[in-house]
Image 1 (cartoon, rainbow, N blue to C red):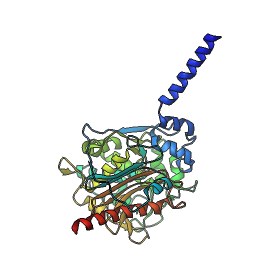
Image 2: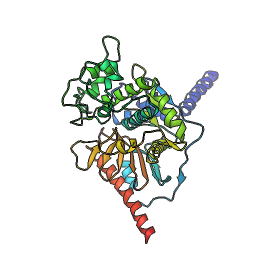
Image 3: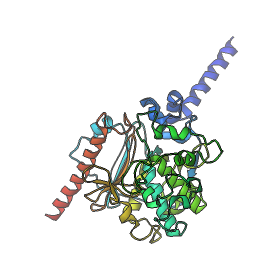
Image 4: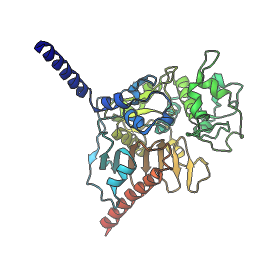
Length: 400
């Protein structure tokens, strides 16, 4: 009996030791793993567990690694910024996982919450759209794409004969195709909720099949309508044009060549191609590095990877969507004060202020997709304004 008791005790010790050895993130996922792939309707506990490791959630599809290089683009350690803002309350109430504020190439503020850290990777959601559009610019510079005036079906043959026949690449980038699409995150019957589960009867691309069946709502170029499906189509277009996977092309043009600190990952759909409107997993510092990359002109080895005037066109309003002072560029949200942002649901963002040489990267797990119900979205705007005010105070003091 003593031997049995010793063996049982040893077994329990190994079980406990193994449980702790797998790490906090895996323990969290084991205890709170989502049981379905419908991210929009997960509980808060499910989101907190999965957002830090979406590429390892069993219910989701596979991912592909975005390789970093041997050298890291370093940030200087700047003097801590003096904020007249209650950051402790903001981080807690806004359910913030990570914030990195970079000013003039130096980190001026960095903090983490929800048991996340600088070594982890958080999901981007639609922040990925701005990276995808940057790959379009790179493909244009590299000669894979002829012109933004080219028609979309010239690159995606499955769209021929659909409402996309007369839609240009630029109209796809600015979400002004005029093709009907419902992006209501709280409606289980919306296009954004249903299109990932669509299966093409003829065995062709399910995404292209779904998009090709959508009706026309407006003439191309007239009306802005947010559509994740169309950003996913942009990803198809880049793959068709370059002959490369998006992860390969992103690593080649930016991730390894610019110097991200660690590998990232991109979730794949059931057809094992990147979900280009969503879901890059990366460190908050690397999201900040991408913002710095854009702020510095998308330069690698002394030369921009993008065509001349691309960034000016991409990050200023090409079309308006009914909110004063705001517009939409090439998959970037634009503001009339010259700032612009990559935004993703549940509180992901890269905010860029060229005039002040400022980048703010944020990862969060808001209680609702758009953060309007509980005030998280307006609070983030207040935080950005507080950082801008602090920099302006510094500059005023230095000039006196």
